[in-house]
Length: 167
Image 1 (cartoon, rainbow, N blue to C red):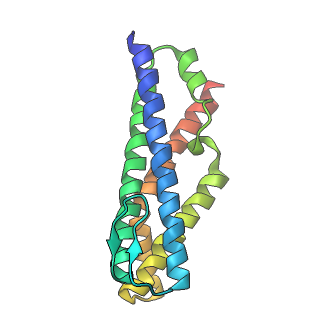
Image 2: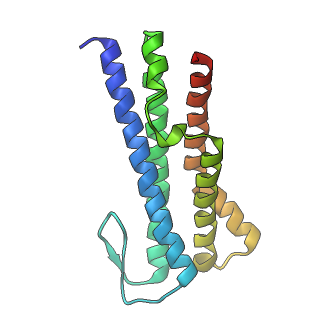
């Protein structure tokens, strides 16, 4: 196996990691948003994808925020490594062809903006019921929580720019 083949394999693995983390973050965000808008009280709540049960809504929401941010950091790490591995490929034709691989990060600016908007809305809406903060404070907290996803989407725009220059 030569270095180009290894870089291609690592590129695919890193992109796969980033996409799985994004999908996990979206599913956590969906559960979190559903809990935030319904506000239904239960005896215990099960944290998705972890299988941990917590007794109160505030602990459940805090654990969702932590899981949401962890997925964002993993997503950011994966896309960062994908770009690093893509830059290691010495064959320009192969590198240009790799940018045509189907990916959630290569869909376009409009889809990125919609995904980021949804993730931001979830981050902001989770902080209001937990901490009882005002509107502008929840926007600040939402911006902090969704920062890893924003960085991942901005890095993926670099890949789209490379794809545009390779054609």
